[in-house]
Image (cartoon, rainbow, N blue to C red; front, top):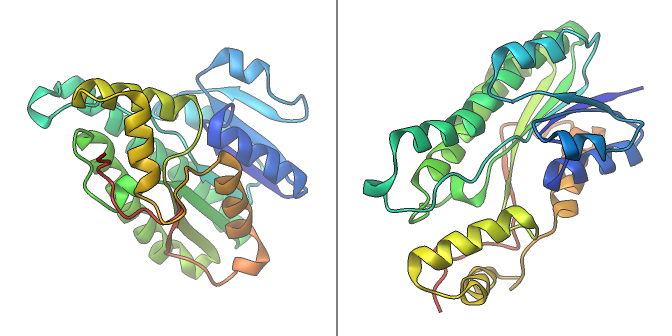
Length: 248
């Protein structure tokens, strides 16, 4: 049976990925830091408590694998919503650590398993913040741009071994995490939550947020044989974001 490992897989986009991969016939392994969410995951999943930016914890999880077909490096945090001069260095470092170093560590330990098999697919979750500048989101945008550079390098390094690497760039995704972003941005800009929401939605061609299952469906496609020649690509699943700085 093919196996997928998803970081931050217990909720949100990661959980939707796990559900979609299981439906596609994969054995699902996940890591997460949320013990309650892990306990609530399907019993058919292999669930591991691990911080994606903790090398020891991640190395211990990967040491239990005898093979890995697909890696979804999905772990990330929103980081602070503030002007750059108001962001503390420790806030910057925490955001970059999870979003960038977490993807690096997952790829570092997945790669030997995939090389041994002569095949594999790595998908990194970036963001439309990795395609545009985002006011008040400097550490998040910087990290999400950086994972695109990491992915393109992985695609070049690993292609000769039959391993593909791609990035999914979600737009605004319905759910608790985005609600937190909306609340913080509303406070920073002196706007209501609904006004910020409407601004994000109006900044897309589809005039809508996306759902976690939309991201999950793309992840399954990128892991499939139908995408066997898709590598080194950034694929936005965002309803076509036109304006990353919502205004009303």
